[in-house]
Structures are given as structure tokens and as C-alpha cells.
Length: 345
Image 1 (cartoon, rainbow, N blue to C red):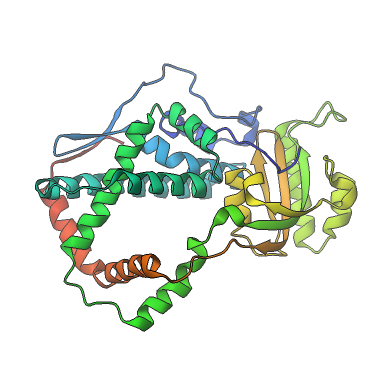
Image 2: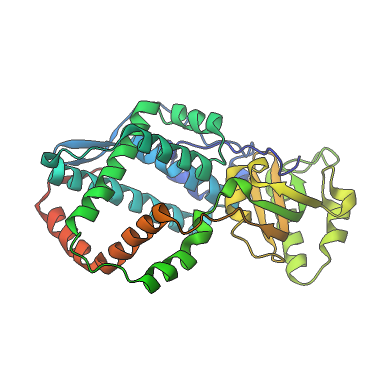
């Protein structure tokens, strides 16, 4: 098994039990998607805002990429996993609540987003969250029992809210040229064409079960990967450990894989590796086949867009948003107090 074309099982977060989230890898021998053993709720109400329903499916879908990345990053789950997961879920629920408040507040304005703009935003999300893999994106829609029309509606609502917020605080001081340049320098990496990212790395792959050791279990294999990570952090040679321990076709070459395009990696691994520092050990990372230690050697990022009119307009909006953040927070807090909010999650 290699990192190339690895595919994670994305669990439906809304149906995961607390035991599954906090248990060790030994409690999930297959290392695959976590599935509920009892009856499955087709869809449930997570919250109501002024009578409008926010469903558990909406939250599940938005959490799926986060859960997949955290699952890879924290094979034993544990307190750090739980804390990050809880924070992400809370932020998503608050985002959806605030979104509905603002939609209600401005529904009389008849805000309109052109369909092609919504399509472009959906394509951007598929590219950035799923490495451009539309098949995997649609699979996750299906798991979360969301239709493409439903997802486009969610995207449209988010864009309407952004537009409404910009209109509400349109009297903010205009951004200065140096503020635009500074904002561009700070975020141009995030604006890049991630599909053009390329990475060279070394890796050690430890399978979930070892055919040469019938007594091996996922838990013992994870312990082995963790012991190798400790050796590497103490200065052991990655190449030698890969040759001696890795169980894949690249072991003889010290685990080296050169110039791997980002789309050839699973989205979860890509999200972690392209944020890593070259030379630093990453892992053990988990996928359904086993555990992987990675040492990024060289990362080449895709090109960032030029500072043209469209990019400049977006940057101006970001700068205005920063300038009005305190004003906005006061405004939305006032609206929250007046809204009828029923949280059930």
C-alpha cells in the first residue's frame, strides 16, 4: 500500500457514538469507517432558528472532511482529537445558526446570486476539500443524504450571507493600497491552484496486520509505528528504518517518492502533508490499510493568482471585514439575543 490513491472511509459524524470517538484503535480492528450498530436516524433536527430547521445531515456533511483529517492525524483519538472535533462541530453549528439569522434579517432585500457564481464556488470546494475528486464528493453527499441541489442551496445561502454582511458594513473605511498588498502577501498561498501542488517525501508504511506475524493486531502495529516515530525524533536515519520496516514497494529505496502531484494523494493526507514543514516527521497517520510515517523532503506549491481586479476586489472585502469585525460581532450578538434559537446538538 502506498500513499498514492489511498482512500479514507468518511464516517457520518452525526451517527458516531461518543465511545467510538474516544476509544483506541483496538476497538476498531478494521480501521475503516465508523458505522452505528443500532437504528440509523434518516435525518434529525440539530437546531431551529426562528422556526427554520438546521439538520444533522447538513452538519455531518460539513464535518466530514474535518473528521477524516483528524482520524488520520490522531489514530488513537484521545483528548486532543475530541477537543478539535468538538471545536469544529461547535463552530459549524454557530455558522449555520448565524447564517439563518442573517438570511431572515435580509430576506426582504431579495438577494440574488447568479447560478454560474454558485457553480464556480462548488467547483472550488471540490478542488480544495476533495482534491478535485467529484466522485468522492458525490459519495460524501450520498452518505450524508444530501442532494447536489441541496448542497448548491447551502452554498448559495453562504454566499448570500457574505454579500449581505458586506452590504451591512459598506460604510467601512476603504482599504489603503498597502493594506491590500499586505493582505495579498498573507493569503496568496491559500489562493493558489492546489491541484498543481507537488511533493517529494519519504515514508514508512506499517500495515494494520502483518501477514508475517499472525499475532499482530492494529493496536500492536500502531505501537510499532509509534516506536519508529520516537526513534526518528531521536535522530534515527529515516532511510534505514524504511528499508528495515516499511511494507510497500518503495521500502528498498528508503521510502522515497518523488514529485507526487497532490491529486494523487488522498485529500486527508494531502491536507496534512502540504501544511507540514520539510524535514519534519509527520505521523503516524492512519488509513484503513494501516499507519504511515512521512518525512516531506520538498514541497512545490501551485501558482497563486496575479493581483488582478477580481483578486483585488476580494482582498478589499477581506480588509473591510477585518476593520468591521468588532462592529459585526456586536451586531450579530444583538441579533442572536432577539432570535428564537433552539439548539439540540
